[in-house]
Length: 305
Image 1: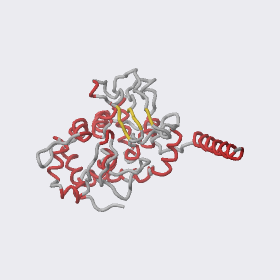
Image 2 (image 1 turned 30 degrees about the vertical axis):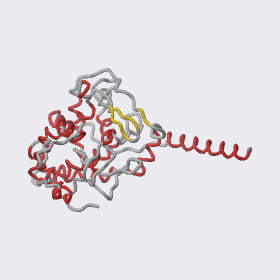
Image 3 (image 1 turned 120 degrees about the vertical axis):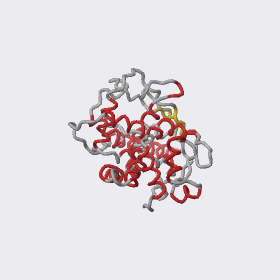
Image 4 (image 1 turned 90 degrees about the horizontal axis):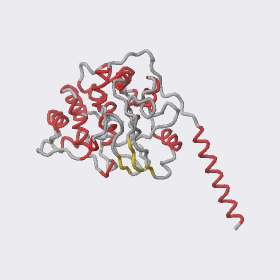
């Protein structure tokens, strides 16, 4: 009995030591941005719509103020609430600098060095350009402050232990891969719809966040991009949106671009669930050219590792 008790104590001590090590394990810099870079609030407002900032951080069903906190997201890991990102300096991001904002958006790290939960899709936003980040920040500076914090997350153990996210980041966060999409998005977009579409799909609109399967820890299955997922909030299922799957379901570039504006499918049916809300609050605000670029890339996307 004494031996068993001693073994339990050793295991508990080891677990405690491991947790303390995780808690003090610093997260390195997640890129940098020129603090003098001037953002355009008009371009930023467009990005805030198309990237889902407004749809996630505003509780439309409860008549919530813009960007003051989103509705509950019921996931296999617990219930998340998108936080207040208005200009309130206490419960919002009013006290943040451009560098703070950049590190959160593209690096998934809060100003005080804490890892952010990947329900915030920073693994996709890592592909945003410096100018896009500055534009977004400029747009958020125009938002009226709301001095009310969003509800706290209610998460299951061990996901409630934020330091464990550092292990998740080590396993699944690849910021360099996300940053590679900026070439397609920033440099080739003007003349090549598919290149612009790649940047929109893989970073800005982050289609893979819902349409790529995840493992039991919430990591994306890199071997099955856009092959569908059954781990959406509320138990929703996202279908496969590979070129083969879309063609089999009767989609074309034209019908897909139209659906991103109207929510209407080629069969005359309408999107439901999370996709219906995302169209209403995000992709319906895209320009016709950007919707066509997304549809072009999804329908003609070459095989990728």
